[in-house]
Image (tube, rainbow, N blue to C red; front, side, top):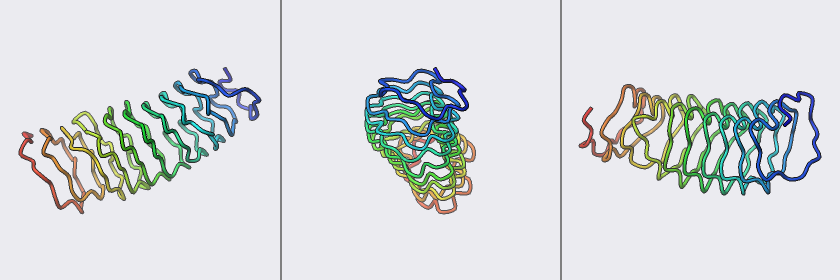
Length: 219
């Protein structure tokens, strides 16, 4: 609707119930109330570099690809009903410091949090599925990632590559893709359900001391 309205900074509209593809992309919008919104499609706020305040996303259940990408001013927000996010959703959101999505179950495709250079903690207690690669690639600020039900597979590549300050709480992986934990501070992992460990998975994990049960691993 307002795609690339580059000088648009103020809108007086009702609370949206959903937001279609690229609705505000590239505008100077700074704040929005999403308390009645259930769906945010792809690219909705992409390149809204001044957007800092998203009020009440607690009805939102899904966020599309690149919806908030390059929103460098975006501050922490709540999204208690959020179930799914897609590729690049929060890419380069450099002001986010902590995320807690209590209902999130799935992260799809690549680079959802790539470039979130201030992000320190993620708490996703119901997350079970992650597809694609490089979700947190070189997010060196990330200290804690808690997703006790997340099951990684061999298709997850470089998910936490270069997260040099990171410790994790995860479910048991069925496989580990290329460079999954390279350079992290992981100290222990249970591989009792794992069948394959690809190249460089634990490279430079200097604190890793305890690998529990690799008896299913064939390669």
